[in-house]
Image (cartoon, rainbow, N blue to C red; front, side, top):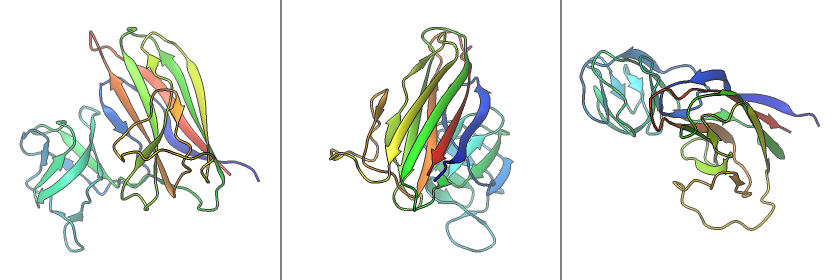
Length: 223
């Protein structure tokens, strides 16, 4: 059986400190914010709804990208037809945004192995700048995710690097009870198996002069 590749993140530079989530579907909505409220997305023409109808169906866990600044957040609550609560304070009046399903990339449920490769092709800023890349999986169709892998942390002056992380569909060792919100230590993989969905999540930190820049891709190979 040969490996089937899945692009979780195409090679591109990230130059703004943010928690980035991989996007695998077309946007549910693309528009412009009409107010500035902390940890909210406010759009007077949002038409946000949780049920089928004339509005835009939004779910908790959906990904919001501020396409003006490049920052990301997750939807944590649907407040009203014109306001969403977000996991981070990323939106301001007149900022453009897109909302994407937060359900990750679908994996063949007959898959038995998963190899994930992080390919950093450029990192040439400050030693104190960092990039942490996480592999999350879902066992319930994308309703919730748990972290099963955390690549070795990449430093801003580290240059090009490449890492690989492997998983088996069935647990290869007894795993501890972990909280869904817990992340693995850098360079660690939790061998509890993987579910029907996968996503990559990255955290970029600029520790000094706001010049952090990392260019990288993440690909999964499934068989």
